[in-house]
Length: 138
Image (cartoon, rainbow, N blue to C red; front, top):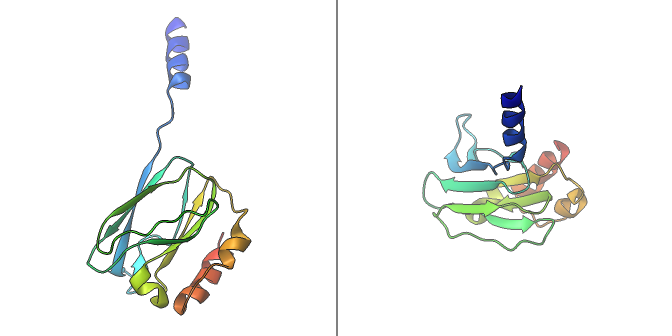
């Protein structure tokens, strides 16, 4: 019994570790869709980190809307990482391919309270229609 109490106390005292998620920047996915992120809508917890990895040259990420007005634009053809510490919806895109609909959403902590602000964010070409579609799924 004493052993069970000790193990229980250790488990409760262990801090939870933040998770890392990788999203690939793709010219074409397995379904034949062109200029896409491997996951277009992801849900993460506060403190989690996302790593964006270009599978070919010519991709980046640029934050377009977020609950904390985050300003972030990675260099083209480079990996990028962001740790999300503020709950809400983050809308990002690939700057060179934004007109082709290469966008994504990150939902942090299950908070979608800034959905209306994200819906008003700048989106061009196919990204405009795709953003509306993605927002309907959350």
